[in-house]
Length: 162
Image (cartoon, rainbow, N blue to C red; front, side, top):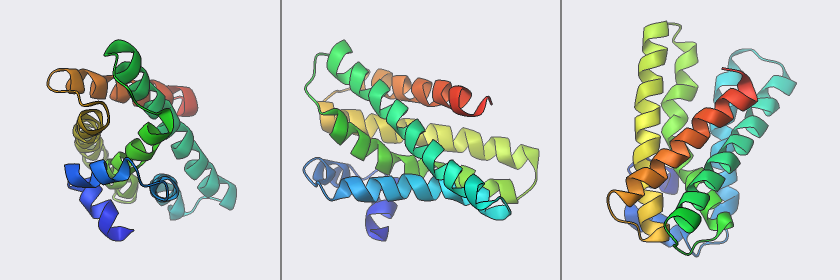
């Protein structure tokens, strides 16, 4: 599992292509998303806060997956499964690990820098998802990834009020 997470973070296209038909990877994707959601809350939150972060991360990943799926299927008339999109986006969510660890650092400048890096990394991972699952080239994969990042941003506002 750790090898897949590292390869997903490295934006390895062959990994994402292998995840298309790997049904067992859906559970691993949920674990990845839940761990990223758990990390910021481990600094002293209650048990409810910790599990709330994991649930919120899973819901946010679902919103992003639906945005990517809608752009790939309805905007570009490609074929793709929403379930598989969730699986791939779940692995792309590893891009938020720096953002999940940084709240312990304390500096606002470091936090916003980590936010910018994580969002850019997530955008690039979503481009790989769009290319692998929907066969989209440039600029279509960038626009599909942009729809996913927009879904993440709107979902963050909806779920956290940020």
